[in-house]
Length: 410
Ligand SMILES: [Zn+2]
Image 1: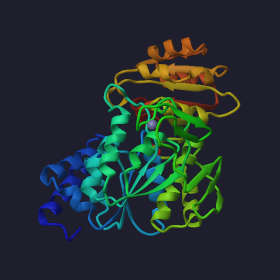
Image 2 (image 1 turned 180 degrees about the vertical axis):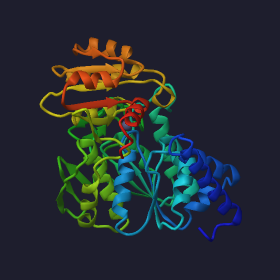
Image 3 (image 1 turned 90 degrees about the horizontal axis):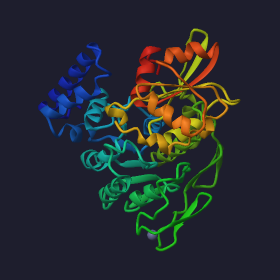
């Protein structure tokens, strides 16, 4: 960092100060404002701060915050890691993460899907991890085929190594233009956005995890890493048991991507697996909070694929669940996505519906023949459930509200 021009040093320092003041004023974790101040003073700041580091970008519709955390945990075996741990995943967040750890030799940055080309160009990231693409916030996010196309164009000719989930056809297509790719069979459970070939528009034939286009050459590449249930097979054919504290198959997918990225940086699974096993929650997700004799487990689900993964980790036997839905800016204002989620899996559980858009949720649950109770807020659900366990699934701002209320446990 001391090699930076004076203007860039000043921009980074002022960005850190702005961020601290924003935090003191109680306005979030301050990453965005601090980074914005820095970039306004020096538009080249991201490029300068990224120079001379081994940098990993992580992008996907779902799982990028968790995977970023897993990779960062793994790399700490080797040295300091700059990372945007709280999901400020646009350039302003990247600037602050790098400015806060000026001497860290490694950086792991979660990146919003549409910013991948720009941030790759600015940072010259040596590794890009791409995991899944599915419908998300349809009133404001780009159509995912267009996003994958932008990834493809950005990676064509770039001097970067890609680690990509070959079970997701759209990700495979987006990653396919890269010079070198590690293919990871990390699974794909939400398939409603990948019935057509991204290359030609023809139908994709599927058998298990395998897929290929009926009309052109496009097919699933042979994976280097394979996740099968809770076992991982490496490119050299060795197998390892995956033992995580983070629950569910989505986190096993995130973990195998983290292992493949770490391997690319020279870390063996023996070194990485114990670090992955230490992670218990990520930015409040999967946290269990004690409140009035109840154990609340907080699950974030922002889009249909995310809901499918949240249902996967619901506690057996069928216990109570509270669902909270908002439709503020960061959630997407359009709640029509609720109709893409198959809520029938909640039949037989006591269900509470809350959040600012609880009536939209109620209409959806009613159509799915799920019995539920509408409550004003999450407190009412908690008091109704009685002592014991309650799983809470919420979308973005609803999750943040609940997390703020019961303590910002990380
Ligand atoms: Zn095709």
